[in-house]
Length: 282
Length: 114
Figure (cartoon, chains in turn brown, blue):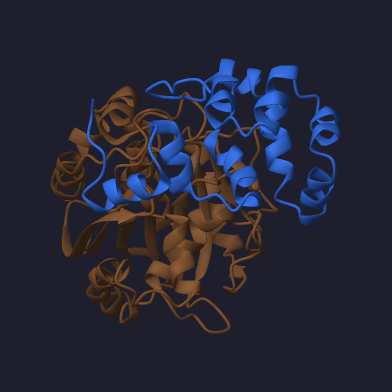
């Protein structure tokens, strides 16, 4: 049976990807952030999964306001890197894992999660930046296959945090019931203090962020109990992206080990967090 | 230019109000559309059915006005990118300070509540 081997929570700020693409990771502004990633990257490079399930949101590149699925999943052989208006990121095409995607769709629908399925999906920075956080120099190809799992966090009402946590728990069961030997990593992306528009633009609530980084390991149910209004009030209108970390956390068991964490302000207009967990056995 | 509200939550009312504006901004992810927009901004807005208020806000780059008319920041950012304007610049516009002051506030740990 397939297994969940680790879970990564990471912000997906586009300028983090741009800093890597433009060779600025050693600059004074960016060095502390990337130094913070180093131990996690070393560990992940030694624990390469066969498949990464990346929980993320599209940012007006593949999904528009004509049709807004609350949850969606990619089912394709491959996914092109999106042109977000300033050219495609110079990173490899993303290879899919359609057999596992199909299994997950069947299992999750049977559990009551009615996912939209994407056969064609251009993946934007929400997915490619976390892959770059994991693997900064992929060369010709990413080191693993990838399944995009999309969550609507842009249009209100977003799914509740509790629903995201429950989806993650069902996702973990679905992965473990796949009849293969795949090692699967689950990424929960986006999030941390994050408000782009309005009079509260640029708000940073480090106290909440640090509480979240801790509680995502030990008290995920507490985070799942927060309302969407709580997330918007405490972390900003875009800070609600943190609910996607709960999908990752739900896929892990309670028998986990924190490998590394880091927290940095600012990354562009936001806080950036990372937490890496090893699954020790469900 | 109006004063920005605390929060702009893109609920279904805002999404309906901002539909044409957001759709127009989304189209700017394609280079050919960016050229068409630059050649005649007003005509391009008309071709996407923007209301007179939305069109005026776009032509005047009234970023707060666009939000009040249903715009989503993820969509209007594509217009800002055409103008070579950063997210820090927009943050400054929304909060009444310069891009440099906004960036400095973030480097100092971010803006606080209230």
